[in-house]
Length: 145
Image (cartoon, rainbow, N blue to C red):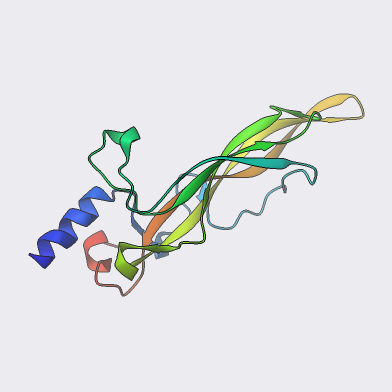
């Protein structure tokens, strides 16, 4: 019964991955490209809590991590002037302690106006809060290497 529950949890949490897998799909746990503009502002629009039903995916799965959606205003010297972000909350527990919620970033291209000219720049924005299975946890062997 317990093994069946564990396997069901892993199937439902298709995004759970082993931490040692590193950077995937352009998402990195610690961005190193251009910082967001100092004068940018954020406005929280909504949040989901660990355990909430994922209605956006058909309602047959539960969220593994708590996260909030934000709209970040970059400023009038940027195009686009705003970007959407999804950030982890301070609740980092997932999979009953066998996993940890980790922030993911995506490097995006925007335009910045400098001396009246628009030039391309890269910025990192928060795009996902992902549950990763911890090395050595009881679920690690189910993920694979």
